[in-house]
Length: 330
Ligand code: UT7
Image (tube, rainbow, N blue to C red; front, top):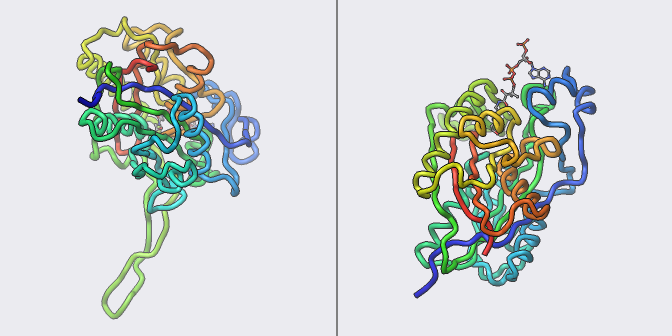
């Protein structure tokens, strides 16, 4: 009999080298360090230059995760790259596979914006639970700096670039304790990176559309309201499925969008401040990468220890949101 329990055995992250602090943004838009800090908790963010790519960042993060798990790239059966900003619209997972030398693995992209990593973990878990795959790499990576309007102060101050990854392995004990995923397309218009084009006549009477993806637009207030209400609900549901209470949680690991959202969700769930993981100040909102980057930093800092229970939750465009309750380690 194959093992069909799930263990999360390795993590890694990578960020671009250039860091931009709040003060530097005052040269681009009418803003201030004070506004950005008090409204969001962000102090600086990393931005990728033209020679840095999403697949490179993802590969560096992945190599660290694979090394921590104690396996080799050839052991991987599946690579799931969760991203909204691939180097190639056809997907970047295969480039990561090639960079890693993971020649046995099937690789594909999965998009669920800032919820991507949680959706990816849960998707990966299904392949392990059915006994099909044993070693799966889940990556969350985004380079949103390429898709921001740097003249729009309501969005450009919020985001940063980066990648994080975990290895999930088949195990005799099951450490993915519960999850819940949600989507609501009726709220889609609140957060977009949408294609926009114009008719161009292809042949007589037949038009095609020619255009490009436009910059990120967000109704911040609506997304804030949505997150503050829906994230506690979905964590509650995942805890119910895990058959544990909120007191059992060692760490609350939320998508790093806004410190005020982290504080509000923790307060609504009755989770004390010292259990809330936050690295927003250093990286801003790195979309699909934010949860695995924060996870990896907390693991390497010795905060998250083997068998600690983590309540992780992502939320964002779609709108999508979800939570996964898991224990760290083999
Ligand atoms: O990753 C996907 C999930 N995304 C999120 O979870 C984001 C959720 N939303 C938020 O985090 C917050 O809504 C924001 C940080 C985006 C905005 O905070 P807010 O407290 O909701 O501010 P606001 O949008 O109500 O704006 C307040 C004021 C406005 O001026 P008026 O209309 O009151 O005169 C804005 O124009 O702040 C102004 N403002 C700024 N001022 C200085 C907006 N952006 C800036 C800025 N610098 N960068």
